[in-house]
Length: 271
Image (tube, rainbow, N blue to C red; front, side, top):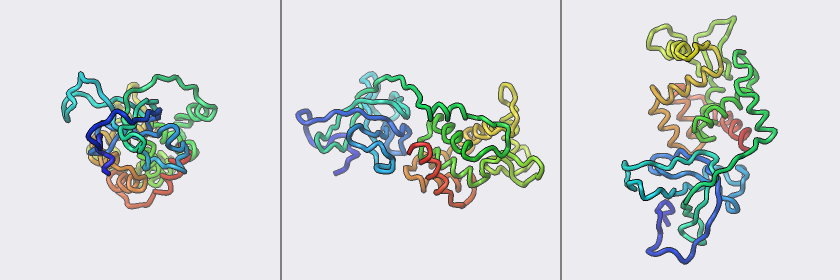
């Protein structure tokens, strides 16, 4: 049975099940546009070690009839990671084809762990070799907050750790590369290193390029600009190993294996 088809039989209506779920990934790969990945209450174990994200379903999302309902016409769903949604299974008791009917607003109070993590955001920003555990969490939160799924955020974070151990610059020993992505230290106007300097200077107010927060923002800036094709390939993956390979090859220009580093970053945040 092709579970990606919205309807499997000729008629529906007599046999259905409803559910509540949490959106885990709101950035679908090519071919599944308009869907979101969900972890359904009572169906999927909340532990990622029991049911990893790659095994969760991509749910259809109902849109209002004020939209065109055709590819390229109208708007796509605007759900984000963490949204709490309500829906039905259109295949009844088989429960393999979820359809989201709407979302429920909610106000969440952060746990003590989340509060501690939020207080760490960009702490020690100007220290070149701040604690790696801290910067790993900062990087994961930054990319997740910028609409990357945990898998993609972990692939980026693992790659950056492999490239630089998240060290922003070497103060006493000049090196051929600089920054968390190992940008080659070339002074030509078109170099990525020079782009980092210009990016930092363009902030309001102007920022020091050596700041960890600025270098994370520059990685995001490059992924959404000059390296948008690499970004598209990254977002099309659903497997952390493949995502790591693509980020390293297409953005860092390296073949180093950082899957274990990515897995560690992923599990530290979600498990």
